[in-house]
Image (cartoon, rainbow, N blue to C red; front, side, top):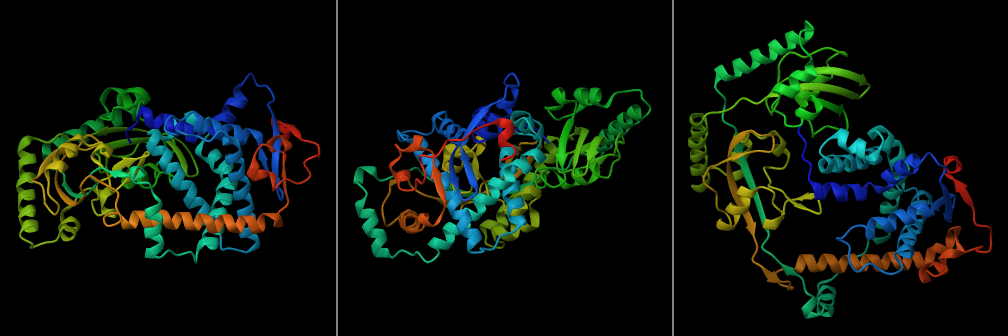
Length: 481
């Protein structure tokens, strides 16, 4: 419900979304018609020069990408052509495929962007289009990507690697090029939230009911009340307004909040409802199918130190059960944990790597400063004393941390890192199998490439009919291609 905006994450998300943003920029540049150019064709599918140029900008504009090849445009075009050819072969081979896979891929991508941008509104504003418009625009690309990946897996499905091959691969790595691994951690937590005093909850519910009545009697404005009284920081700017989608926001927004919102008619205000974060009243602003714009006021009941101490004592008892082996961590988690979001991952603690959550992390990949201090002091298999903390929604809770894994800093070696080395060696072998397949089968596809890319050595062998006229299209004409 709240915004989790991180400036650096926003920058990288904007790069990832650059194709969508580029389309917006083209439309907004003095409303001029932009001329594009078809530079390659695979079967009936085309590659536009703007796609390659945008791909180059994505890499060169990102400081995290270093040592880029001088012929980056060639590499990007080669990848685009290969993906289209592999997708076409997947269709020829009738590899199983469903629309549910496309929807799942879309939801995964959207949820990733929502985590990076912090809200649906911020994402749509940055992209210059609604999430439904993104769905329509991305669907062809997602279909092609899924089919291409299926074909790659089909080609490499029988590729395996032996221990001898792993060792041979390891021995080819220069010793001064072996990776250095910092200490990595895997940890889990059990969380219990102190229960606010009943009188405090009653007072908050009465406040919310009074504000609901004031708005319904036209004595107050809902957005103004949200700016003044909501415990959500973003409400000061938005008046408590949110754009939500019944499908896209599953897992991101509390289901009790979502269900209450979609029971409302336009203009209607909900009774006081409880979510994992606190107590709300919700006003339906507008709705179209699964999309809705709502306003809400949230109040988070404060807890006293006495209520925190009650939970700490309970947590002490739970720790005693764990340390005396009277209960396993899994049993204690299933019985006592109150964090709804954690129930699907067994309480795993996440670090952030390349802006994605990971369960194996280094200390500098943690955003929780308390855990940064705590984990290095713990031994593997140890349970922490109960820790009072404030979660990302602003609620105070108490947790026990369980350290599952901690590795020592070391230079990569085949004894400690065999699985990682084997995975890299297998990836290389699968890539070689794919390259062999492409060498043998690319001639089976109708491929044309613009002569302007004759400087790309790996593309020259695929070029056909390069003396034919190069086609230029305006942005309006391309819509009909």
